[in-house]
Structures are given as structure tokens and as C-alpha cells.
Image (cartoon, rainbow over all chains, first blue to last red; front, side):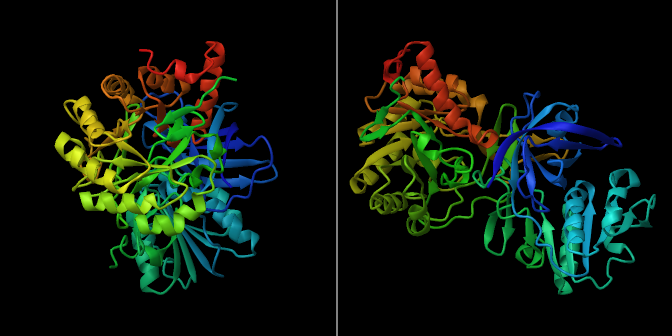
Length: 256
Length: 301
């Protein structure tokens, strides 16, 4: 069941120049939210921004009835959202899409850029099952990896930066622990990163889920704007995804 | 409570608010948000003879007060629609109409014939105005002779209410409307999207994979109201108005300009409950202005 509700912003945190996090309180009990699901956020106050913006769910606190969005400032919509203050209301359509399956006994979670966002809720879901995932976060510089400490209680945290400012120097796929014997990989981040991670997993017979970030209008499978190529033709990322089994995305990854 | 009931040919609408094809899926996508039986009608997505994949991603770009799309009629095809989709949606307590699309007169006729068999579909909207397909679509809708030919052919095989959806991408929409009226259309709906284009100057590339696409949203509304007004004064058949409607006031503009009913499109993406808000807004307007029957204000301009 999808909902449309006004949330109240109870916490706004600026995380460097490029990111901020909003914690939003629901007026009553939050419905169950799977890791990898997203919300469509209404953007008010800019006449050039008409459509909602799809934002993945970074964290969920069922006791406090809050969810947290980690937002990268990339365009008109997210710049407008960055103006929001604690106490403001924000209208969400949620929870949308299909999340991660929480599979494997030795999972690797690979994130880059804003794609780091859903991995916190995902790490917590693994942790709740008694599984300690390896979490590999990448970025051009350490400033572009906005959240690190929050992951530490839930898994083994590894970092790769292209300039070597934090963790190992290089891409996530070049990290010394990337090719360790994991039995499942979940990835969300820039398209070239997800394609490289997905190809590695498919070629090595490792189960892999990829969370896509296509541009969307409706978020509920009505407008058919956000499609990706799959083994069964065009599928809506908002409805059939955003999380897809990598085996369904071979064409997208350039493997066919 | 004012009477909101209107008629499009043989179809009685409990209120003038319908949903525009391609913006409301098969209705089911919105069932979590609204009571679908509150609507005057639902026009489901453009349906073709065979399954279509549509155009490559990216096929949407946001523009000021609107958006461009180049979906290109992605749909399951009429066979799957009749077998799998229709049984799921036929019980929805409103008028379910199918938008019929094609690349040839034969394809339009074949789809219309198959939809004609479906008991709970009281009418079709013949889409001779899609700007996002290479063959057919808008090609039929920009030439009065071609438009008349396709409507005549479909009229021979389709026996229920035939609405023809017109494109604004013509010099005279009145000329096309008169041509399809003469060819046997029971109603016309307008406007489909305006052909548009947007360029990402940083990447020095068009935003859409198809370069051009269809513009919709509040930015097109004044053009749509003007065209509805012109057509409503030129034809005898009922006119259905659409283009940028996002509020009851917007819907009322179309009704006053002469539309017997309206379709809400792009606004469904921003607020999935907007259609019901518009129905409630019409009720409220009638109360405030002491309008007993919505038909009393249709075409007053």
C-alpha cells in the first residue's frame, strides 16, 4: 500500500557542501519500509520545479516514526529542498518500488555518491538478521562520502577515494577487499560504478542486486518515463525497481 | 448538491472529470490514493495492435511549468489488454475508455474492433495525435483528409462512442475537428501534447533520446483553452478539453470555453489525488456561485 502524507522535518543536518540529511516524522505509525525503497518528495517554492523528486530512504526509525533522507544537491529540485528547515512540512508519496531481498551470508554492499543513501537501512536490515555485511563506500574525494560513522555499528566499513584522501586510493572495484569471497553483492551509485560491480558479479557467478536511479516523473508506474532495458524489455525503474537482479540487466551492463 | 452529470454522446459521466491517457496507467496505479469511482471516467493508456517497447531512455525532461515526454506508446498490445488487463479493471465503477493508437488504418481498425467486443468499455479515444512515434500517430492528425480517412474506417467497425483526440500541432485545429466530425466522430478531445524540445547546454545534448517530444503541464493550458473554445464553436459534437489542468479553476476554464468534460493529465504525476480534489472543487464552485447544474456554465464564453 502506497501513501501520500505530510511529514514534519524534525532534524536537518548539513553534511559538507554537497549533501544534507532530513529526518521526517510521520504523524502516526510508519508502515513497514524495505531497504532500497524510495519516496517521491514534493518540491515547493520554485516555479521551474513542477515534478516531485525521487529520493531513496536512508534510515528508518520505527520507534520514533521517522525516516531519514540523505540528499545530494545536484540541481534545481534538490537546491530548493536544501532550503527546508526544521519544523517545515514535506509531502511524500511512499514507500515506493521494490527493495533489496536481504540475501547471502557474506554480503558486500557497494555505494558511491548519493547511492550511499539506501545502504544504511540495508546494512541495518542485514544486521537485524544477525549478518554483518562488508560496506564499501567510494567517492572522488572524502568530502563526497558524506556519511561514514553511521555505518560502523552494522558492518565492516571500507572506503575507496580516487584522490586517496581517505581509505584506499582508487575506484571501489580496485579496492583490495573488493574481490574477497562474498556470496552476494548489493550496489547503488553512479551508473559506471554499478555497471562495473554488476559485471564483476555476473561474470563471477555472485548474486547481485543493482539499485538504479533513473529520472522519474510519477514514481508509481503510470507515466513510463523512467524505464531501463531488462531481459524482458523496458521496465519502469520506479515500479519493478529500483532494485533489480543484475542478471536481468545484462543488456544495460553491456554483457549482451 | 449541484448536478455535475454530463454526457459525451451516449456516455453519461457522473461528473466531467476524466483522466488523460498515458498519465493514469490502467487506473490501478492510483487505487491506493483515491476512490476511482469518484471519477467521471478513466482513459487508459494508448493501446496498439502489438506490444510496444516505446522509445529509448531518457524519454522525459522537466521544463518550466511542464514536462516533455517521448514515451512513444509503450504498451502491452491489444491482445494482452483484452485478456489480462480488462478483467482486472472492468469492475471499476466509472467509465473506462481505451485510447486506441496505431501506425496504419488497418491497425487502428483492428484494435478498435477488438475493444468493441468488451462489454464494460463504452467508448474509445482514437489517438491520431501522438507526436512520439515515427509512423502514424500525429501523421494522421495533421492532415484533414488523412484524419477523415482513419475516422471513417474506424467508424465502420466500431459501434460505441468514438472520441477522436486531436493534435495542437496544426495551423487550424478547427479544420481537423470539422473533418473528423464529418467522418463520423461522436466527439473530439483536445489537446494532445505540443511538439517541443529542450537542450542540456552543459552536455551540449538534447535531453530526450528522440530529440523532440510532447510538451504537457500547466504551461500549455492557455493554448489548450483557446483551441477548445475555437473548436466548441465550430462543431456540433461534444468537445472534451485537456491540457495543463491541475485545479478545479483550470477545469472550469475548459468547461466555460465549451468542453462538456475534461481530462486531467500531467497533474496526476505531481499529486495522485488531484482528480478527486478537482471534483470536490467543482462541487464547491457550484455551491458558491449557485450553479444548480454544471451544464448551465458549459460554453458560456
